[in-house]
Image (cartoon, rainbow, N blue to C red):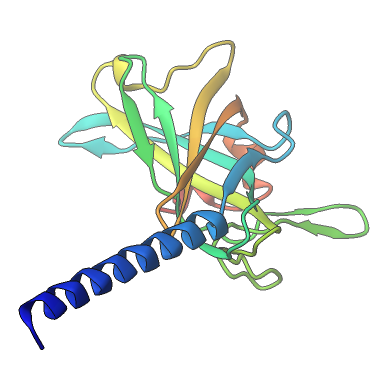
Length: 204
């Protein structure tokens, strides 16, 4: 094969590879999952609560629990599995604390004639699957639990205004794309939350 033919062949192969890459990129962008996250019943199910603190290097700590109920939708045309759902809260010092979820049993509440059970996101329970796969055009949901323990000055406390904490939830799929939502958490007592999840303050 002459040098001219070899060069032309190499160029043709490079062009075909480039075109193939563009087609794959187009398919990925067209078919990618599109996640959207929302609080479920935002005025009802989003809570924070205070728990007994402990000690860190002989310094008393202050402990807060956060229990949220969220829904994740996939508006794309490709299934996606979730790899994280983190809660981001602001401190009085205008710093951000990013919290990872802690495994909990399915929240449940005993009514007069039945027991109401909610899913725990990403956790297989005795009743519900707690799946993290979001099918195209479908949604999943569940409760997620987080804990923040701080010590030192009150500037490390979460920012509480009018008995509420404003936080953000970040959900990310395995393909890397993240979705955010603002969540307003209202204060509950530990006893009230323990009616849904007994001994929640012992879970860590």
